[in-house]
Length: 100
Image (cartoon, rainbow, N blue to C red; front, side, top):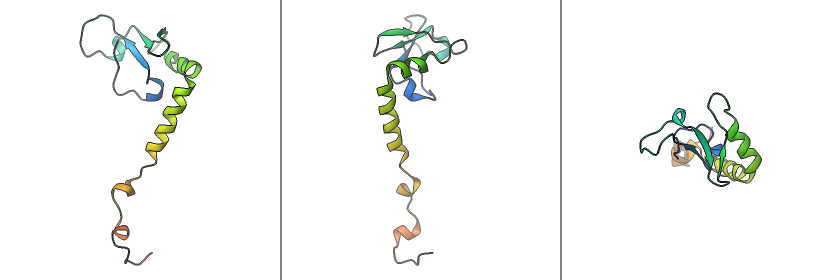
C-alpha cells in the first residue's frame, strides 16, 4: 500500500491508501494502483481514476462523516491566518501615524 502526494481533496484521503500492484518498493503513482483500501474499516474500496472516480468520496461520506467533519473544522482554523499576521503594515508598526 502507498500514499500519493498532491491529493486535491485531502479530507477524503486521510485514511485511504492505494493498493500497489506488487510488493516492490518504489515510488508508485496513483495510476499504478490496482485499488484503494480504508485503513479504519479495513476494507477494499472500489475505485478507479477513470471508471469509478467517486468511490472514495462515497465511502468517506457514508462511513466516516466524523472524520470529514473534524478535518473541515481544523482546515477552517488554518484558513483563519492572514498575511497581516505575518507582514504588519506601517501603521501597525508605528501607532503614531495618522489614521486614513
